Image (tube, helix red, strand yellow):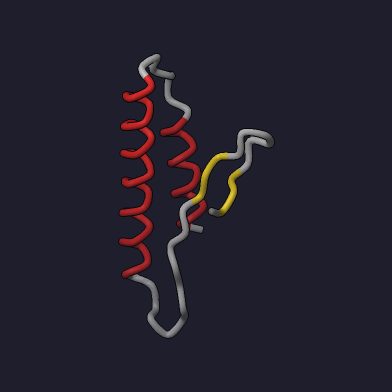
Length: 70
């Protein structure tokens, strides 16, 4: 459940008002991904070590508006 919340948070961050500067968009996107990854890793540290877990980045599909694992 917490990872779904992180994905929704990332989606909200990435849908902020667009910036016309391509470099600014790249930096903004990188910061959003880094923030989401750090939060996911914090959650992973608190999970029970008996069960295997991993953190995987997701990107927003340009076709269907859904997320893809990469």
